[in-house]
Amino acid sequence: MDKIKILVVDDESRMRKLVRDFLERQGFQVLEAEDGLKAMEIFYDDKDISLIILDVMMPKMDGWQVCREVRQSSKIPVIMLTARSEERDELQGFELGVDEYISKPFSPKILVARVEAILRRSNVLNPEEISDAGGITIDKAAHQVTIDGKGVELSYKEFELLAYFVENQGIALSREKILNNVWNYDYFGDARTIDTHVKKLRSKMGEKGNYIKTIWGMGYKFEVDN
Image (cartoon, rainbow, N blue to C red; front, side, top):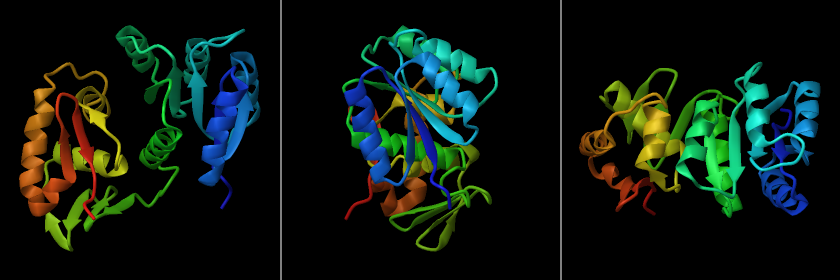
């Protein structure tokens, strides 16, 4: 199988090298661009790119402009990197169709985990859509969950929530991020909706419900106990 191509766009060569090294270690092929114009040249030239990691602040053409232009012709996943963590920046990113939003400085391992999670969700990675964690098997194509071989009846949102947790194992997920990814960006309801669904999901999972850890004041993390 050909290596999955990822385009890394950042005007800092050290940042590109850091991200490239970690991605290549996981078997990805990395293309690099030092500014937005170069990124668009590569994007139009290579139709096999599966994901773009995009810095916001760049010369010639910033990350917002690149994202707008990409979205005119493609739904390719985009992860935005920024030194700023203001809410309006994040909202602007989601309005433009950004899939993930990561503030600098960040852990390269977490970035790689996010990349893999997005590629799984977009069927680039593990296209058979079956994931397994700690005795929990999720078949997204059949919309079925089994725990230690026994089927579990989940509502549509409970299923989507569990699948999102499993795809993002070990990553702390804020309630806002869960709302954005499971309830979609156009959902303006109360974040307590998540707490209600998590409570129901845990009870249906039995002792495996302990894999969903509460991070007080923030959200949740799915972690399989050793």
